[in-house]
Amino acid sequence: MMTEHASVPESRRDLVIHNDWWGSGWDHVLPRQSFALTMLIGTASQPGCTGSLDDLLREIFAGRWDMIGGNLDGALTFSWPDAEWDHEEAPEGREAYEANRWKAFGAMLSASGFPVPTTVRDLSELYLTWGLAGREETPEGTRWSMPAVLPLPVDLLTLDDELTEQLDRIRRGMRTGPLVNTLTTYLVDNLGEPQELLTSLDRLAAATGHDADDVRLALAELVESGHAQVRRGQESADVERLEAHRRFRLVMDWDHFDATSVPLIIRD
Image (cartoon, helix red, strand yellow):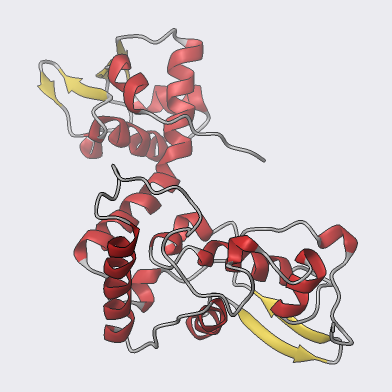
């Protein structure tokens, strides 16, 4: 039965995901259901929406949502039980993969002083503890909220070096990805994929509508990814030390770029 005050306006029935979710890196730390849980809480946090998460599941999904594992009492997993297993990516098999992930996850949470959740409901309570979500009882009913900027896993949990580096790369990519996309679009659409270009940070900034520091970030990413070289004379130049007005040669490897890059789609 729905609680008396539970309400999901018709215009708010579309599920939403927090803008900061991908950049925060939580989906690389938490079990699979964290994505669905974050969408559920994000939807519950919209203006005019009241009720518990159970209420919201009943309202939108008639009480069962396979993506969240059925309901809030469904068991957390790091893989989808019904999905075909990728033996190339994880040759150890699903059972061993799950065991290894749970061992690492449990050790991480225990070292950080948090209980290890086993159900989606347990995880939702950890969201409250970590500040990923807020919950308040009001005369209209239960209201959920999420902060504008999500706390980062590294701020709350004891991460190993490999995971810390992975999350750093993700955050850096979220920052530089759109800048690289703008710069390479200019090089392709306006200049016809030049193999070599004599230019400067100032010139590229004026051409792309970004400032010189943004162009510097994009160039550094292109160089680190092996897509480009930045040269002064016959020597490689340190992008971080380039003066904005100083000319340099940008040497592009378009074959490498085309073979390894994933197109970035930006939607308003």
